[in-house]
Image (cartoon, rainbow over all chains, first blue to last red; front, side, top):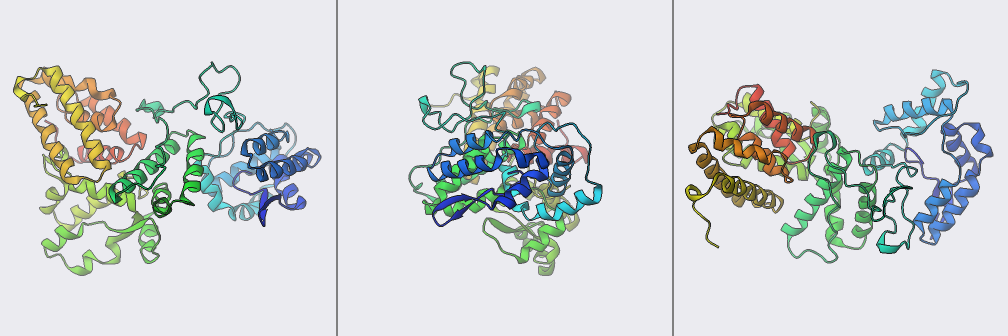
Length: 347
Length: 123
């Protein structure tokens, strides 16, 4: 449930609904006290049964039948407050007419409760917590291998069952297209494994940037499932996930240097090899002011940019060649500029 | 197949060659082949020099690549036509930056920044 509250849980091998009181609490936060009289709990039972049968589409249909399609007036305000607090988007749902009962302090008191679900909320938001009423999925077993893919709803022409390939929208970029195919066998070289990680991460990032709301969630789920059985993908998955990080402040990036994590590299704002060639002091090159922890795939992208020759920005020199003749301040300015433009550092 | 010499190519063929090189660059970047990537930039630079040698109208042939399906091709075409079509080219670079289509969006952002601070002087 938005923004990432699990309404079912695993008990042994079985999937069961969470305690009825807990489910009622969360549902009524957004949908109001009337939701107590809805079919939400029986639908939750039905969804858990479907999940136990491996029927995700059936589970979704069961939840859709709960009739919780409108927010309460207080729920609409709470949703916007929670979305703002977690830095994610609210759901695009209508809300019921009626008086508001919760004062601002009541809304504020709810925020810490939702904060617990921030990690799941962030992941789901990045993965596209889609509105099923806008992106209903074809049920499993549908013809033409459409099961689980997105149905464009009533009125879609025959053959249009695939999700619309989002482009870069207002900038009319190339179409996003389908996600890269997950290799059915281990790619034989590190180069190919890395290439897949880049393709997957970039596709997901582009889908999120396009607010495609749907296909990236499906792809992320498929990736996670494949990573459970393929060691090479298990190893690359942290790189892909890290690539989806939002830009962070310089303090955050610097503080994370002391907390090594899978999928991240320590990156020098001022490149180290040219700096050592110029005999810059080690305490500047390796000092905390010069070190940031950034997603490894971003580190590769930025390093490749520094190395690329014939760059017309710098009169045909590579950025690295251009910076060789510049002082520390200009090299740091460009290093920080690259972190901002490559989406790692908050402007 | 032997590649035709650049000075024997028509302007249209040069624009096509530019696009082919851009696509190959994209592939080399994906595979982490920095050396190959840089060699391809040498080739792209050679095409650009050939177009410049044929005058401003020839350089404008790259404008047709502004909506090319490959983002690397678009970006390089726009960066190399800033001197002859500054407004249109800048718009394309800005759109690529806004699209968050990395790694080209990162390079586009750096180009805009370098233009604004006077480091990048298009000719």
